[in-house]
Image (cartoon, rainbow, N blue to C red; front, side):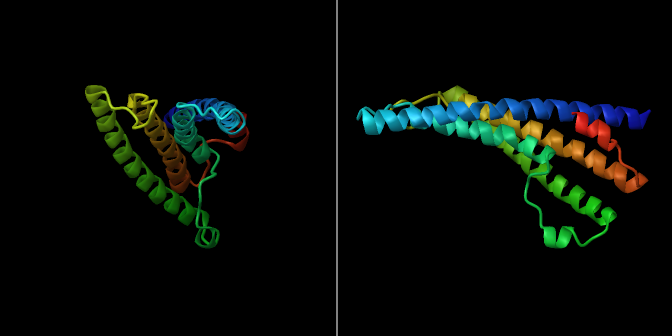
Length: 180
């Protein structure tokens, strides 16, 4: 019963994070278009925009922040291989549990700071200090969401590592993990 619940939780998190990661990747062509548009406007027509720089910063921030959980899901983050590859699978589980715990701690701090900044941005109508001066609240709201999703992905990974550490068996079989 508990194993089935944990499997359903992990598979659900996998699907949500996969869709968010793929959705964030769709912003990459938009970012490329904005940058190309600005370069053409600035250097060919000698008419720079007031919005392209700010918009490209926001888009890059959205892509990086929303893609963090997806990168974690794909195990694309940096690892200290010289130490990690030379230990047993149980020690790897322990290393992973420690690093995931530290990651969640950091993301809780990011979430708290983002909520604070979001509230300030709404209350005081904070804007970017540029000629265009777009509002900032949406960026802090996105960071709240992205840090939450990343922490949930790390928590999901902790469940899988802890299950493997205590039982010696994988929580999710390779075939069902690849389906997600």
